Figure 1 (cartoon, rainbow, N blue to C red):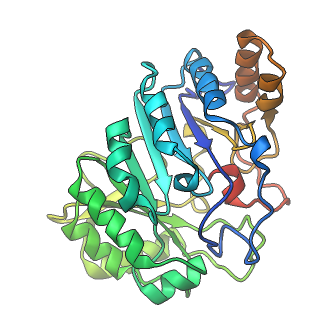
Figure 2 (figure 1 turned 90 degrees about the vertical axis):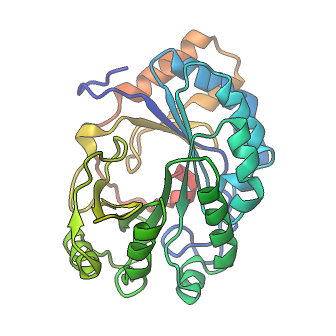
Length: 317
């Protein structure tokens, strides 16, 4: 499924809820959110129908996101249903990890291939400051259980913010002794929180080189936007995702399906296709397929961050 610019669109990110048990300072307003009504959220059978149609156009990778997807009831069953679609080669999950210890075994048994854990600090005080709530120990227990399981790779996403969590030593050392892939993400100022400042790619590398010499691994992990490094003899890797320093639009291979049924071709653009309304009006599968084609057609060549405030919990990251 090629778009107008020759990019192969094969990856669908599905937000199953806009709700979250945390209130991270770069993602949600402190007072919380006005959540989408339950009747507006896509039902699992609707998601499965849309995924099956998307596979006819070349979609073969799925990532489940939120909000926090593990607060959605019976998510394990959704993973199981997705696994039954033979065209889907890869199913992954992005979670804040708070409930991972409880669900990881069932998720693996249902067919989950990979997990990404959003974890911005290994310091309990800093973690509490960033999330405004939550217990770091819950996430660590889930991470350890994932490491002890068969699921691979395990990626840890760290949004790095200057003067907040810019000491990267503990994560660097974790990559040396654990089979995890730490991805440091350049904060993008799209939520109207002006007091947060990003740490640039150059600053991250300067910080990370304090703990040992970084080298390029022989087999870079995956095909995403991260630029990977590792320390000599390390079990894991270090990845940098620096959307401010670099533009990855020429390699973008994804669509996003929001929890309220909008197809978004670009994370930061206003363009979207309301496929839920079509679905609930019982249109034909061919019309739904055309909706996917339209979303691909309007996918921009380059991102254009508009002035409207974007909260990542709604879009799905």
